[in-house]
Image (cartoon, rainbow, N blue to C red; front, side, top):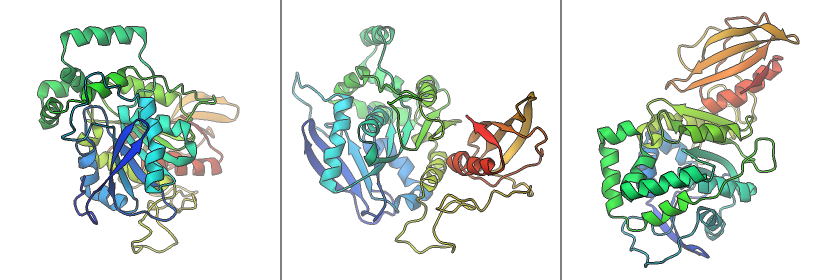
Length: 397
């Protein structure tokens, strides 16, 4: 996937693993002290079809220049791949996760920020559980962390008798409204699936996947920052909500994207880029270290944020609200104090209408015109909440 305006062209690395040959598109060069960005597409996608609109977004190009990019594909899923012989045992999703250390070792990469969609999100989450030291952050789109139950298994088998594999995969990728309207993305996916002989093998492995076994307060959980993403009306909305309930709320941001459809990275690349920008800034990675800084003050970051995690933009006293990117309402929703605290509901919308609702316990007489400068879901949920803590507020998701 040659990104527009990219320095150099994509280099392809073929890495032999015990589970097949991994094909990796490599873009950019290593940045000292920084992880690589590692992508893994969903069933029915190549890395180009899954991520090209996202990485073609101008602001995403600026972010990506600060990282080495690795676009990993499951064996035999690249465009023009020859069919596997009859009876070939395709690797499970768990085994695909076990391929990743071989890829990173081959490319001399120590750690990654993963971006995965659907089956790719499951694979990267599994890798994050087994090799937490190698994963600094995860963006998981349309993840379903659970194995199929007996009822799901039976329904899938029954559907297989009445629908083609192509139709089943399209139903996995897109909403019913999108399938009925058949926009270009749906038509292109149908054409691509018609010429992808190995996709049914990966589809079968996705439907026979195990359970990630996530537990919010248990031993099995993701230790890195996680951003969960799903579009409204997505076939995976319930699964992503369930995944959010099983992860550490202090490490997890949940983004339900309006008009995101089944593939938000395709339909809303600008919104996902905005969220990703603040995700990496919240981890301490802002500007490209090899590019001149446009502003002084020792390092990059979101406006009003420093890389040491201290916010310059969250005032201790009320300020005049900005038109965008700030809380639009602070409403007391529970009159009965809990101890010496009262419950408030804070509704915040970003510049691109990404919505975040927070439950806040604060002093009963908190000022109604209190405003903070925060410009993204992750910056808001991490940096902003840190500053609320300094003011004596307690927060919960």
